Length: 248
Image (cartoon, rainbow, N blue to C red; front, side):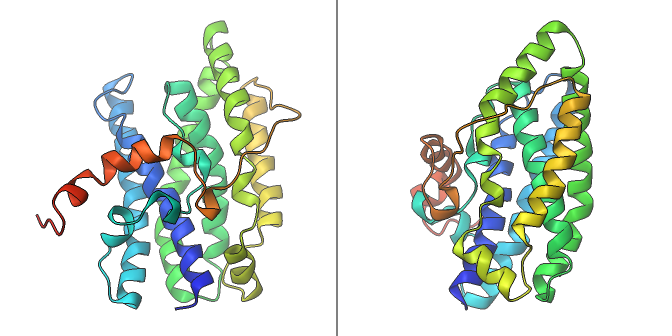
């Protein structure tokens, strides 16, 4: 398999797997039962999307889909720094989600058109669910940003802290460039313009302010992660590490 194609698929799959793992931490802890269930369902959607991609790699490499999420080291994951950040509270979770959902939705919309029919099919299956994710997170951001004084302040703090992770999705890795050159992946510059415009409209409607300047945090696509990633993997990979080859 072409290594750039494999890494592109892992970037995509790892984003969904790691964010799905993060969101699953809310199970049983949501602010109300309806939102608890909604967020758990979003986590399951993301993990299901990641499974399609890991299964594709497994079929092409003669491995198991479980090898990719459970047996790789931290430096072998290529997800964005954004998705591994802690939940903190509902404000942080929704701002992280709305930033990712804008990237994710428009990313899938472009991959659906790509020359690689297998990737296009996975994108087409996933985009319907991600459209709902985007609606869910956008509505919560607007509701809380344009809510009480306290909810607005807490949402603004989350925006200020999370904005530094918002540029990394659109910074092309070598794999992104290779896939674009062969019409198998999106043009991230064009994607950024479209996704950012839609995101900023939600932020404005929520009566929040996007920081004019912020330090850009990056490195996830190259396997360089924040301090939070190791703890997340320790939880996610525990059973397979403790009982190698475990089968249910």
